[in-house]
Image 1 (cartoon, helix red, strand yellow):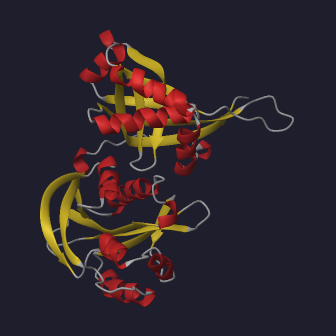
Image 2 (cartoon, one colour; image 1 turned 90 degrees about the horizontal axis):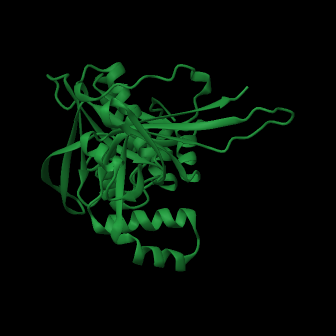
Image 3 (spheres, one colour; image 1 turned 90 degrees about the vertical axis):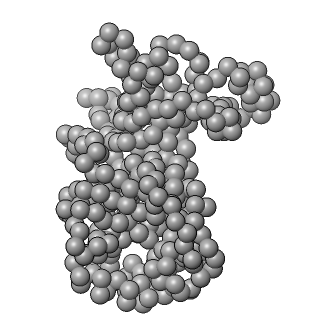
Length: 327
């Protein structure tokens, strides 16, 4: 995925993503106050603001050049360049829940770092839009306030969230860029492969890595594990929640070659122990179903083993992937 400047022809496609009046206000708030929205409405709304030099509409495209998402960045105050606001954050509904939103937001954050003077980003999300809120939290936004918004279709509660760019950790760029794979490929590997190696800070300065089965949730762009409630791993995570997780696929050989071509994904992030019983059941059920299609086995494990299980949630701070040839 990459970002480019909004083009007039993007407007018609964005309008198609707003399938109901509720969706219009959920994603654009009171920016347009009109449904159905036309391409011309978007173009006319953006035009004068773009000319101000303090309004930046951006479109996300996939590796085929297809528009998959859109959002705007603006300076909310004329006399303050230290803070920008994200708005009208929307992804094609046909691909929602697959990590595209978080990818687009991470690119947006990098855009602010590279092109603008701001050190803070904020945005708003309506309380009932839980999936969007989880997406914003996954990339580092945190709640700082709440307010009531009077919308043409009702009164909605809005949560304001912010991010301080000076506190964001800068990760290294991949050295061999030609080997880099897309974020979409990274997610596919996480979904298809059953396990990887989780690395933590161990005891006496030694790193500690252990193989674990995992489940990647497209809904919130997080990776989940289950394990015993006690042991070296839990002790290490209580001391430091920062981890690295590596997943490899099985590789393939091109015709006439002996060497494998292997794709791998490396994640940096933070882990927390999941305390919510309902979430733990979702994690354990999803992990078992990833490995088995036997419902009797599932029910037996949930009855007998669930009380002894600890579940872990990995929030992704940075993810890269590459393909290497063994020769």
